Image (cartoon, rainbow, N blue to C red; front, side):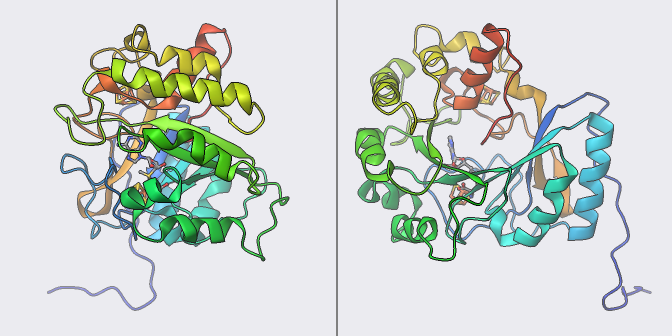
Amino acid sequence: MVVKKPRGAPLPFREPTDFGDRTFRSALVNVTNVCNLDCVHCFVFRASNPNRPQDKMDDTIMLRQLEQLRDKHGIKSMLFMGGEPMIRKDLVLEAMPLFESSSIVTNGTYGIPSVPGHLVTVSLDGPEHLNDPIRGEGVFQKVKAAVFAPDRDPDDGTTVILQMTVTKANQDGVEQFVEEVKDWPVTGVAFTFYVPLKGDYGPMAWRDISERDDVVRRVIALKEKYPAVVKSNIGALELMLSDRAIESTGENGEHCHMRGMLPLYMGDGGNFEAPFCCYGNEVDCSRCGAYAVFNNAHHRAQGEPAPAPAS
Ligand SMILES: C[S@@+](CC[C@H](N)C(=O)[O-])C[C@H]1O[C@@H](n2cnc3c(N)ncnc32)[C@H](O)[C@@H]1O
Ligand code: SF4
Ligand code: SF4
């Protein structure tokens, strides 16, 4: 006989997946596999990753599991991601105080959350004519409206960074993007670069990372021109150049310190799963463009503690 849960009664608690006994100072959590957009470059929805929208975890269970994983692995900083995390805004706002430092990366189409003292990274992949073919028709204007929303207080203490993921398809737009958004009521602009799958030679991917050098140098020039707006470190960007990028990544992630971050993807039956790295499975580390990898390496080379990845 099937015993049905009485309406409104809490679901029985499930122990979190066993990820061993390692310490992970930072983690990310995909609070949902649901997304209202269908971006061309998105690593989350690749076939090799846990990402089925029907795999869900109840709010109460997720809060308790995050608390347990925090205590077991010593997690200090948590990045709330998805899918689109603002689809579960109430859960995210409740979970953020569980960690010493919490940040959100969002597509911005549900508005910009007010979380004083925290970082909110808002994704926009270039000026409108380059962003919309990647993120969807009308998305640039929707995000712009959210940034300028009359009920948003840009001085509420939330650090809001616009992040452009630079790919081979939108690389021509980095200068126009900064010119266009530099006076928007946000804290600044950041750049990260495409992370391809192994064997991905599609329109987003540089075949060889030496082809990426030109746009990396142009982002360095933008940082020199607008040091207060562009939040990237020149030292980190220089580490991305093709003559030395492999030193921070390794062919298979063996030099990458992002692998010390616990990626909590939403897997089968609504249980957390950890893929190879926060960019999922089957990634091509030798062509990885994740800014956080190089920023981390840059800080370590300076003898400074590694910053928590923002996305
Ligand atoms: C996967 S999204 C999830 C959060 C939210 N839906 C958003 O779009 O911001 C997080 C960030 O990853 C970036 N991203 C997606 N696919 C990528 C890829 N293949 N390589 C590098 N960054 C990627 C997105 O542009 C976004 O800034
Ligand atoms: S909005 Fe974010 S999660 Fe959704 S498809 Fe785009 S990059 Fe992926
Ligand atoms: S894809 Fe990038 S972030 Fe992931 S392990 Fe490889 S180098 Fe690190």
